[in-house]
Image (tube, rainbow, N blue to C red):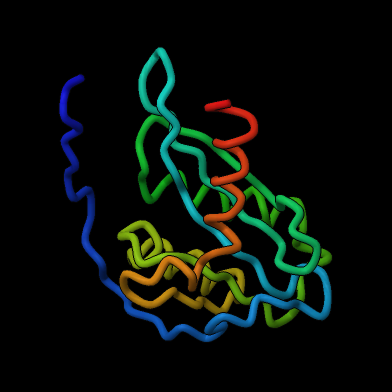
Length: 147
């Protein structure tokens, strides 16, 4: 098996505080969302799913897939979520993500500001700070993909 080559695809422009810390409880729908992207190895190559999960009921608000983990993939997922939930999204919606360049890019900052979303980024190298999003991919891969 050929060794996977990882490349830096972008630059972290913005840094954010970990507002949620590890409090993933939400008192109402569409007030706290968690988001992440992952890799799924397929016979045709790598598939990169991006999703947003409502921390109130753990439902998936939006998802999108691509062949690369790009800023555009993340922005499209946010766009789909807001299109589906805009009328019901809380006035003070918090979006929790990891520290990947997709989530700290200028484009991500601009879009979330446009929608009035407050960003909360997990602490560096602490996967438990984004556990609700990572948990979804773990279940997806374990129960549906790599059985």
